[in-house]
Length: 217
Length: 341
Image 1 (cartoon, each protein chain N blue to C red):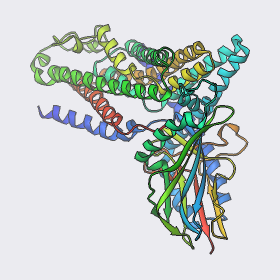
Image 2 (image 1 turned 120 degrees about the vertical axis):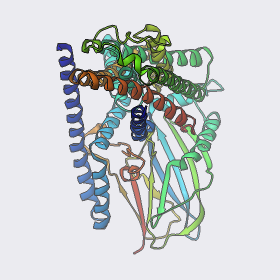
Image 3 (image 1 turned 120 degrees about the horizontal axis):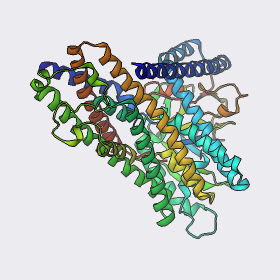
Image 4 (image 1 turned 180 degrees about the horizontal axis):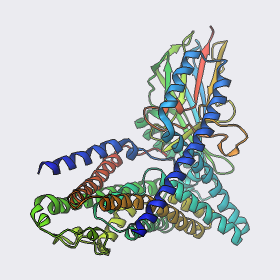
């Protein structure tokens, strides 16, 4: 029956139209981002050191069962396996780190110096360094850095104060300006350190917090 | 006629409520963006700004409402952890009521985002011409199973087996895959049944006396002999099968709440919160399922006999195909790399 084929075809069209909505998730994990752009002795940009602090609920569930020595605290050694698994699975997601130099995306290699720490309240922070494939002389190049999850399962937002900094070896005259497209008035406490509001894969970056790094003019 | 009108009225109210929320969110967001823009204008060239604002505009009210939902979720997330700690230190009924209320709200909002079988249940209800009441029952059953699944996984793994958070996450993921696969299988089954009814045996259909009342009776579509019980009229077995398929996937939000309650030493509070959350989820899912079923009923009522049969065929086959498609897409997506956190 030709009509039936038509019906099935239109149903399939509906499915395809619904695809991005279906695949999209909603955030369960909230991350406050702190990043330091690394430079070598020659003043070339070499990578990014991340410190990502997690929300209380995620932190509690991530450390569950990891207090191996039973002292009620979670030290770095106990959390090393977690750090390892985290950075390894981050690769599939490009480390959620999107850096462009004059609009060209930067490629990063495997993270180094990674560890997870728990603070006095039990909040976890994952620290790792993401080396760039090749060092870049900053000069007058426009460098933009944003951290976000295009699929929105994890909600990243820049930390409230100095979320992105430059290492001390950075060339003189470099400045960072942070853009938070999705931040609301500071008087609404609820949304003060709101995460990057990227909603669709296509528009994700335009809703993410972004740091613009400019050196010299 | 009256119940149908009532449903449509409710659906309209829900729709208006949803749009007005997104409208408010849009206004809020644009204020925020304006502030950022004017602050950023000192450092940004004009052309860049223009390009960005266009991008933002292109995302529209849907993006705005999604962001609004997500903001509320983060706020609620924090209030929930605060609520559990408060309950732990005070142990008052008021603290418990607050936690239950917050969890309920979390559930309502949570289900408004993608997931939780909204689309699956709506499609199923439309495909199998369920009544409004049964669609609601189905939504609540699925949410109840989802709550049980989360409680079971945390209860068994964290308490009995002393598993780590990572292991719980892996198991939740496995259950999620099982759920999506089961939904796809159920969809395939429904599709075969619908095709048999409307395409492969159209003569049976055409020769039958087709009254309008048929579509609204509580006996469903018993007028065509069905090959399997799954394709027949409302059966508890079938409803439970669908609810189980959807509900076997534990809600990640509920797992997080349960584990957090566990680490605070008041697991029972997490269980109470999880059921409240499920109630909220069920409400949102049921609202959408009712809208979907109501739309079908309106269309059938308005249509002539001939058109009515077409609507029946389209809803039956399309709805089943949708369940199959959703299950397949979700299953394939769930095979991808697991999120690191």
